[in-house]
Image 1 (cartoon, rainbow, N blue to C red):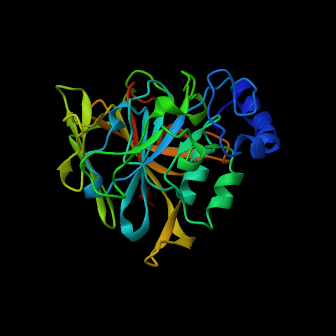
Image 2: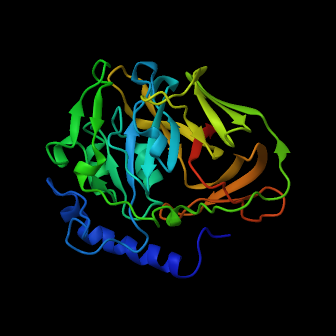
Length: 318
């Protein structure tokens, strides 16, 4: 069972070889996204590009800015059992996003399923930097972005006060930016069970999604508090995916000696998809890093469509 067929799959596999040939130039210091072409001057890929931003998610970093505009929000486990978010923008760009924090090894495999992704991050530990440079993505850390793209602001203390202006990056996400992920959107499928609330626990973090029939969205809570934006709005998702994956120790540690967990997003396993006030038991499959992740019903193997709107994917330990 594959994740994509036809022209989309052929485009993805031919593009892999091209990425390796231009990686050094595309990641050269000073290169940024261009509305007329990639960093090497070539036209952007047919699948569109996305802008991914690593976002802080400890209590001092909240409320976050610009998270409500993301098309997809990934929640992953980091050191000491805490969580960090990756917001992916494939459509509209908010004026500012943040607080921006550092990248992890998990991000590199995760982003392989996107066509021509750009990654906004505050930095990374020195041993991880060569892996980031070798990855098929555009680096947009402070040292590789225009001088006015990043700024410190708000009432938060460092390091929770670094923000980015996406439009200053000259980023131009396309409507097809999510096509390569394997996500499919459509009417609510048959089956499922009524669900009002679901909670996913990390060792030192907690996500709760509560169905609001009035808003037709899953209201997001983190660590027992309703998640809000800096303008006072409530974070809400149209679809929530609890994806059960292998989370293991990596070769990296933080400054305190805590191991950095590595979340494996290639493979297959169980998932739970929440949409329209119902829960669907599902399977996920991603055979290769460059493939998207296909979600199917647990019983018959039919593709499971998501509700149109923001998607949250929470990586839970299998």
